[in-house]
Length: 206
Image 1 (cartoon, one colour):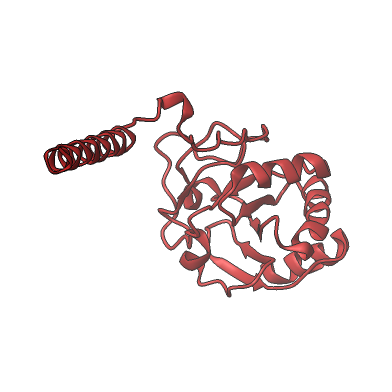
Image 2 (image 1 turned 180 degrees about the horizontal axis):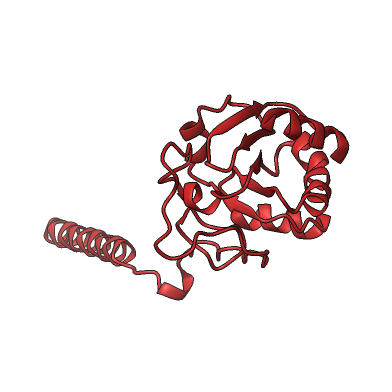
């Protein structure tokens, strides 16, 4: 009788093993096919809102940059304003202009922004603007808002204007343009007060 039971038990054990392996395979397949609901998937962080800022100088419709203007064809949006694709060569023509290239990560830039703000208020005959050289528009606009800076700035997140002017890779840099948009001075320095800036601009415009 013992000899008759042996093969039967072996068959039962083999069948049980096959059943267990089949169950494991089904579980593995089900886990591999599990789809995470859209609500549970990681979503990109929401874009930071950009603080509202004053409008930047913009040309009249159809206006063109003067011949030889250094920034002709260079188009930038205005930081924190509903203005995109402004042709800087046309926008800054007609009066001398002072451009201050800055970014939030540049400590000397943050220190001298009030100097340019004060100079702009004292010299309405000169167009004074910032050029924000950083990717995050939200961070730049927030810095200006928190510092109480009224000076408008173009947003150059793709680093377009600096190479067009051949500027050195430093910050801050100030560029003086004449009324025809020609470069009269490139000043890679920090200005301590509005009088110092006024003297530099007057000297550049001669």
